[in-house]
Image (cartoon, rainbow, N blue to C red; front, top):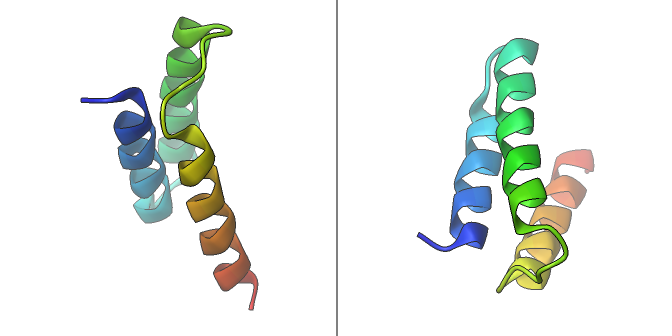
Length: 61
């Protein structure tokens, strides 16, 4: 699985999380992935971030 696909899955789990603890644990996992990749670009990350931005905009309406 591509790194961006793993991030997408984790963010979907955050969207469905029921407790702050679940969100915190998933956030830690996201942090580990980002740290592991260091300064290397993550293929597809720009498109993913645009998708997330659109989701957040829709939630604010």
